[in-house]
Length: 92
Image (cartoon, rainbow, N blue to C red):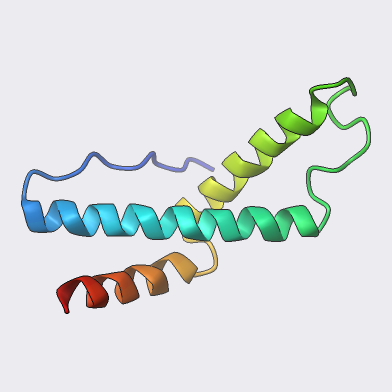
């Protein structure tokens, strides 16, 4: 699966604001997904990376990146709902 990286902010100030709001929404969804995946036990496989003192830390990095990629590829739809709410609040 090829997931595109986040786009650079547009030059138009209004579009740049929308871009910043969307990126914030994606990061919030990614944080939620990371927590849910962690609670489900993903990233806690004993010896999954060969063991060692740094395994937990690197497993956390992997889980964070997986959650971010899930959110950027559509995730569970939470980012879009958050974006719409943030945009409505910003317009008010």
